[in-house]
Length: 323
Image (cartoon, rainbow, N blue to C red):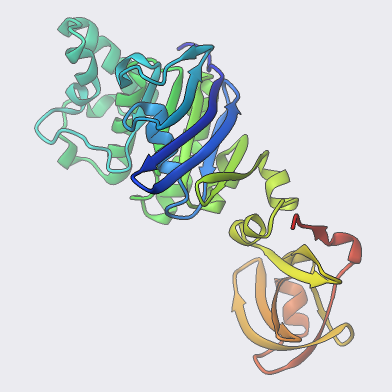
């Protein structure tokens, strides 16, 4: 496999009539990195991915891969490969033939494409399933076949459109670890669209948060989570409260909020046990504040809805948001 190449979006815009799906987006995705495009439905993340793949035309701007403008090249000539959310496996073809299909379309002889398909299936631990049909596989196995099919063309950038959404929660966690391991082994760029914050935090070298057709914030996962730039990012990433003090808005991590007999007066509204911690929502002067309390701490002095509590935090933990 070739090493990952820098991918650059230069003032990329996508319009559908009067609707702007992606607005003047510029960003450099570093080669060999695992990037998650994160945001709510309709924010423009999947449209951005499809434009990079060549499945959507751009309205303005350029898409540059390893110094070459690929904006108007067909998908097969861009150096990218896309793994779709639905996997889109051919039901009448064997696993091997599904993986080899794009090579068959390029006119590569049977022996060579079978060899390449076999190599990819071994890479994703599916070599023993080469003769099976997709219907004979579990969801996780189908996902691996789709991944092998995308990788068989030896792309410089692999594009993944919510690849884990069809899996159950337990399998999703296992497969995302496999994706990260595979990306590191291959050394190519993975660009992964998701609306799952936990998924992005677990996988990404860089998180790109989109909202209303633009990039709201980009950075390494810890920076995006711990230092959100805007109120939207703070709320969307979760685990934060947004407070207004003296006309300035701040983000405050929920695990920095303490419950006790002293502090700002509040009334407990909800209590939710979440294993390692307990999520307590309390109303303070008309504002709901979330506190993530360590399990042992909470049960040493448990609270119930309707109880009066004090809320406290270190002022130095407040993170100022952009207006």
